[in-house]
Length: 606
Image 1 (cartoon, rainbow, N blue to C red):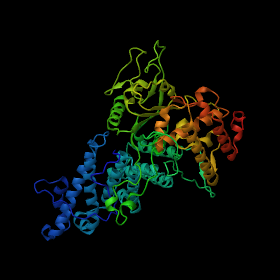
Image 2: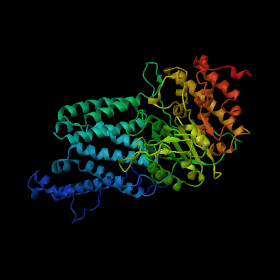
Image 3: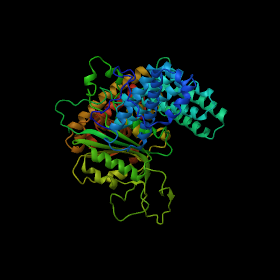
Image 4: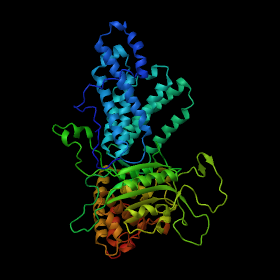
């Protein structure tokens, strides 16, 4: 995934006008598996000598492109998952071949139908591969525009019914291709917040799975039904529904919009650091997930992205071709999504991000994982004596072999301790820990004098609060969608759109005031201000303070462990317990008619 580098081969929309039908001349001596079947396929349409030379060349060129595309696509799995330079040229070549293949089959469809026997599901396979390329390009670049391109190809497959004839063939492997296409399409729609399409796809997938298991009596029925259960739980994870006047659900986006982060006012003195890399790590065993993406990971992923633009519309504007590669705004930070990584995997990705971090840039580490607590009392209080978080649940496994601990005093192998991150504090580091043992990271030490901030979740929530842990952490929800989190702790489960938009506008005012509180504070640690120049980090910091202030004012959040903490500590009287901010929170509660759930004796000055 690359930030700001020119792509050697820019992926193009299927509508791009610069595509041509010309292909490379296939080598004479090297024949693909597809070409070995060519003679038999062409002979079935009549005597081979009767086939015009031009049509024979068309089929030969198509077979070459098809084989080359498969070869390149299969090679993608051999590319390293980390690092941001090794993969670019290979992706470029793969995009180029698939672009030619797609255009070629469009231009020569009749010949390929008659002489090659091209079937619609084969066209669907090509389109599906291109959709996968765009999706993986998004994963490597974090550029959300490529999600729109993936959606475009996946949607075309559905609209044109490319896979409609698969069920008539007695080949279960073809049906599995269709089912996998549905699962991939659902992931893309989830990331684009196209929930209406997701619901339709889930219904279609359910019918396809039922037909598949009934016809072939396969062993993977349980696995496919689990896919259905996971996605159904995933789309119902939000604890609050926003409704239109006709009671249809409003789909809200939580990516960074142009008006999302509070603007820096003139005179605000903040650092010039920018968020460049983020590791999003998830290991909550009971939390809803889909496709190795937990709800917490999904929410944090969206909190670190801008609203996507339509790449095709940008690239196809007359006169825009020369400047298409020039970004008109700052790009998204590059992200690694790590679901239950082992310690060695996590450290490898951390080292890669650290190595390639540009100057004046920030590395963010987000941990959503089960807490690991000290096994016994220790005479020392070092960076490995307070426990940490468990990044992989398959404990005590090395190279597939289970090992037994000889002594309970041994540390958990896949526990990430605060001390494990010390080497990476040589560069600006921003850490978010959402765990039952997040306070372990309160005992951090800044050894190298670089900007360092840790935002730490509560370690426990009040028992009176309905347990929503399976549907995602409350702390991460505040960082992703603070208004929804505020409604949830206020006991609300639904809201009309008009009131929602009114509250969102008021929340933007609160964020602006929080920004002023931070930048005007005389006792705040300078690390917070160093990070405040970046839009994403500024929004996370203001949401963190709003979360902490809300919980401190709430009547049922009365224990210290119910409150978020930070390293370095924030000056409470100037931030999370500031009377001006408390007044704003009560006013927001008044708009929602839930003022009774908050304490009011904290603002006697007003």
